[in-house]
Amino acid sequence: MAGIIVSLKDLIVRVQFDEDLPSVNELVAVDNPQKTELLVDHLEVGGVAFCLNVRTDRSLQKGMTAQRTHRGIQIPLGEVTIGHIMNALGDSLDGQPRIDGPDVRRKEIMQLPPKSSNFSASKPEILETGIKVIDFFTPFVKGRKIGVIGGAGVGKTVVTMELINNTARSGSSLSFFAGIGERIREGHELWDTLRENDLLKNTVMFFAQMNENPVQRSLIGISATAAAEHFRDDQHKDILFFADNMFRHVQARNELSTILDQVPNEGGYEPTIFSDVKTLQDRLSSNENGSITSVQTIYVPADDISDPAVQFIQHEMDSILVLSRKVAEQGIRPAVDINSSSSSLLTPEIVGDRHYLLSVQVMALLQKYESLKGIIAIIGESELSPVDRSDFAKAKNLIKNFTQNMNVMTKHTGVPGDYFSREETLKSIEEIIV
Image (tube, rainbow, N blue to C red):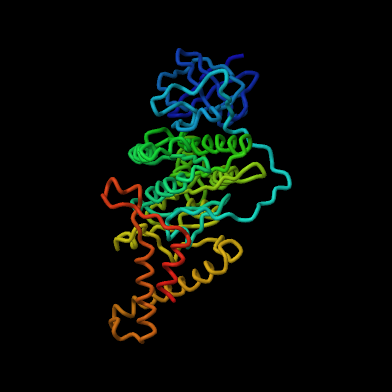
């Protein structure tokens, strides 16, 4: 029995079914030349399916009929997707033909993987990034999550691109990139960087940039995660998962909530913000088949790090790298606010005693540096005690030491990028503070 479109409001299409109601997250196909697919968001009493116009088809009209498809959004899986850019529906965005055919496996993006049984994480394995400030303060540990937090224009995307560039060099892991609601230009730059460095052969990309509607922007992270789960569970690969920007995922869900006339919570976001964040983050996990190590940028609206959405996402991270506008204004790149950054992985058991003890000493010097800056502004550096002057000088050298040129910016600046091994980073710090 077909349903009938009874009303349209922006991206919301209400379809009346008298019997054989569709399921939530099922696609229904409109009987028009395009066979427009609508995604069922929820069902109301009386057989009305609230559907989302995924492709923003403006040719829909009241009275059109729609049929159940008995399936949700499906994306292609496997080796054929490597090197491609896809949207939330699995369509190619790189000018290549649609990934399809009898041999191509597909998976519904809302289909959860089987639960792990008696999985216990192995000994933590540190992945070297070549970026001093990250390797030292927020170590990149296999199977864990790192959040890169900052306002607009402080370098979140540059840091992410550098991480992709540096970690993909080894070729041992498969990289996934989910572009969620960011600038189209940045997507092109990332594509060019990966192509020029011959890294597309180890990368799968999903994009729903600023030009897409909130339905696709809210689904792109889930689509990319579903594809990553396949490589982890069926091909037993270790995955490096990059998402830029996780705040835009919440923002897209918030836009949909407004269109659906849902009452916002106290923070002004959608009432389902906790489950929206948690559902996606819980799927970015490791099991006995393989690991998913994720780096997620988190935009801070109006530089307010206490924003509810930022806090919700931040609580899901193992390490937080805070990029600061004040640091960026000093010409320091990457513009990391070291005193605000933190990591639960910076422990002797994971990084070793040498690294841990150095981090304690460095943090003490940098905190003392911050407190001395106010005093120096009043009385001058020459009035400090010899010990304070020495510590202040060490802290300045440390800050300079953590500044480095990015490889992905070489074509813009003409300055070659730097890559430092973890051992080189520790040695350079020891030379300053010992």
